[in-house]
Image (cartoon, rainbow, N blue to C red; front, top):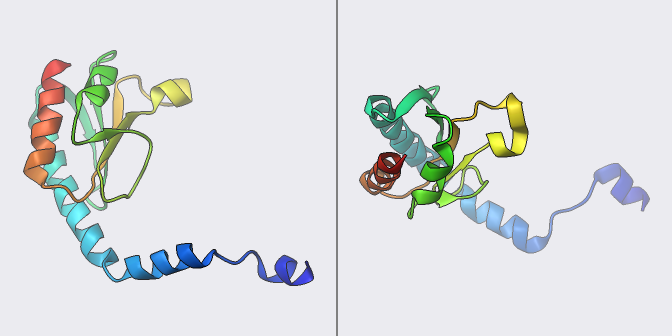
Length: 133
């Protein structure tokens, strides 16, 4: 007990092994996510259904606004982009935070975490969902 109190909990062996294995490709994955996110942010800025894009120019996380009330239609209409809460994975995810966090978050805001899928496939999925909004 005293050792654990002083040193903290140790990681499970399988989790530690997976973490170490993933470090080998971390730089490549993050670079790919950032490149895809930058391209998607550029395309989103030009889309008529998108009111505002928030992308600082690094990483794979984009936030964008659609008209109030249409965010749910957009987030549930994608097939490649999963509608779930998850950030930084190899699969792209999107969600509306307003329904979870209330007035702290604008109603039409969507959060997109870009994965490793082909950027044109992601755009096809996203633009089809935006067309339904």
